[in-house]
Amino acid sequence: MIVLDANILISYWGRGDVHTAEAYEILDTEDELLIHPVTLAETLVAPVREAREVEALSAYTRLGVERHVPADDEPVRVARLRAETGLKLPDAYVLAVAIQHEAALATFDRRLADAAHARGVGVVGA
Image (cartoon, rainbow, N blue to C red; front, top):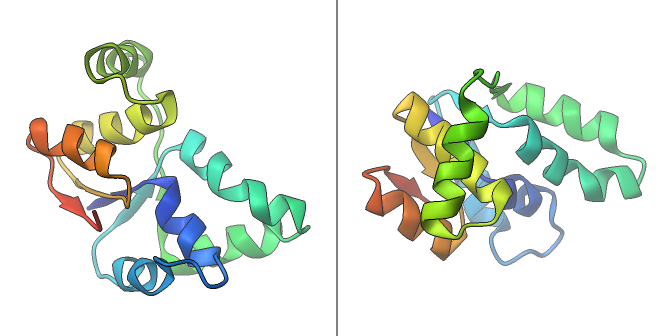
C-alpha cells in the first residue's frame, strides 16, 4: 500500500511540472493507493479552477486511488504528529495514514519524507 501526498497527484496533473514523469511512475503500480480526504481536497483545487474536477475524480478512480476513512482517534494522532514534527497539518494527515496502515508514503516533499523516515515509514519519490 502507498499513501499519496498531494504533490504526487498535483504533479500528475501538472503540465510541464518537474515531477510529472516521476508521478506517472509512482502511480503506475500494482500496490493499493490510498489518499486522505484532506489530501484529496488539496489535489482538486487546480481542477476545480479549470472546471475539471469530475475529470480529476474519474482519473483517480481509474488509477485505483482509494479514499482513507478516518478513525475516531485520528484527530489526536494527527495533532500529536503536528506537535512533534512541526509539519503542516495536511502533511501530518498523510503521515498519520501511512503510519496507521504501515504503508509507504509517496511524496516529493523532503521535510515530510524526513519525518516519515524518522518514524520508520518507507518513502517513494523524495
